[in-house]
Image (tube, rainbow, N blue to C red):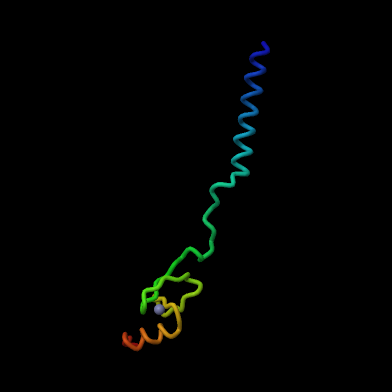
Length: 79
Ligand SMILES: [Zn+2]
């Protein structure tokens, strides 16, 4: 009957190890809600930059206020 105890013991330890690994898994984190990964393209010069650093005009993004101004001068909106 020792063999059954051994099997149960191994099974319990395996479950504990799996549960522990799931709790402490360092691999996959849920996608962080930072906008650092969101890259936007400057409509004027085409450079890519993080959304947090971009100048926004409507649904368009620019690398700088100068390029936003330059773009708007060339692309007059009818507003
Ligand atoms: Zn630009």
